[in-house]
Every structure is written in C-alpha cells, then in structure tokens.
Image (cartoon, rainbow, N blue to C red; front, side, top):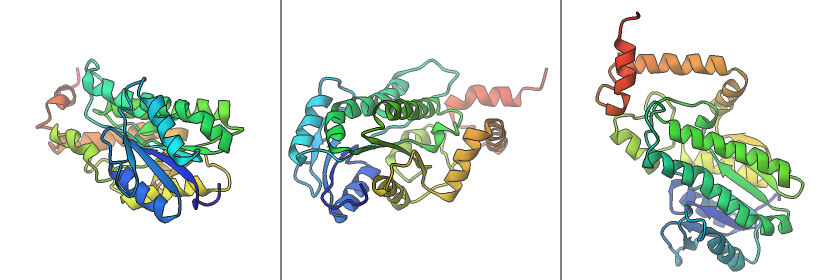
Length: 274
C-alpha cells in the first residue's frame, strides 16, 4: 500500500476530532471510507454506521456491514478513544472501566472482526495510541494503562498476522479535543504538562503510516514526540524524573489545589519528611 486512491478504509470514532479530519483527508486522497461511531451519520460525505464498540455482539455485524459496503477492506484505523481523570491510588470506577472498554477492548473487537478481510487484501491496521502509553502521567492512570495495553495488543497482533497484515501504532500528544474536557473540569488540565500539537500533524502521521512502503512499527507525530518515545522506552528512570520534576512544580504553584482527585498527592507533597 503506497497510495490511497481506491483504497477501502474503515475508521472507528469517525465523528470525533481525529475521525472527521481523517475522513476528509482520506477522501481527498481518493480513498473510499466508511466510519463507525456511537452515533450514525449515514448521509455525510463519509458515511458513518452507528455502533456501540463496547458491545461485543454489535461490533462483528457493524464491521461486516462496513466491509460489505466497501467491497473489502485495505485499511483499518482504530481511532476511537475516551479520556478522563483516574488517580492510580483510588479504586477503579466507571470512568476507568469505560476507558479500558473503548481504548483497548473496542479496538481488539473491531480488529478481530476485520481481520479476515484485511488478510485477504494483505492490508494494514493502524492503532491511534498516545504518548502516555510510554510516558505516563499521574492522575490519569486509566488512560495511560489502556493505551499501553493497546500497544501491547498491537505487538502481539503483529507477531500473529504480520506476515499478511501490516500493524502500526501512532503516538499523538495532546490535541485540542473534547476528550480532555472531563479532565479539565476536574481541575487536572494537562496544560503545562503536555505540549499541544495540531490535529493536522496527527492525521499526516497516520497517512504516512498508511502509505509507507512497509508498515512502520511505531510512528511519532512530532520531533519532540520521537524524543519522548525514545526516553520513555530506553531511559525510563530519566522519564520518571522529568515527570516528577514537572509535577512538583505544578503542585508548588498551586495548579492542582482545586482538584479533589489530587488531594492525596497534595497532602503527601506538603507533609514534612518523617
């Protein structure tokens, strides 16, 4: 796959920030695109079929309908994702469960349903992960865990089907998107912790992965992203120190004083050493 003209593409989370931009870019490049999302939009420029990706019974039928509509499948982009605050010190709740369901299990279900068509076409699957898969941040444990697990799934899948299907993972950082709204509302904004990047750059990275002569294993979306991936993977102790230093600065500045979910961390940070 070195071009997109005529390629048959399925995009999950097609109504979201990345999904809408991906649909536009893929269509402009001559691809035929169908989306999956919780809310159907069948009459748009990119038809979107309604499907709850957390429903194990609904996904195979929705994927089969998309593949039938496309007449096969050359590329699956697992883009659907949700975020939200989830401190690691607190018991997992519904927010945690939803992130694991959408960010990991939905991609697993969709990929499994699409694999027969992808294998037949010698196609590709791209997973949209996050820089937090290799450089985790505090107070967002569910997101980091689910995205790291997604990468582990992609690695296992590559070993199993890599002779016939290219498997790539793309690692964006923070993009202006509603996915961050609940975190910001909880007083845990990533501002000052993660550098913003334009959605167009993320879409371009995904398209590069889709059209490379050989499917790349890991794709950073920026030069800084490549450095962060390298540090997170090859110098994890250094990555930990960088995160701790940034966190200490935010705590000292009072950035998290109004965040109830950060109360435990604030208390421990301000207690005198025993």
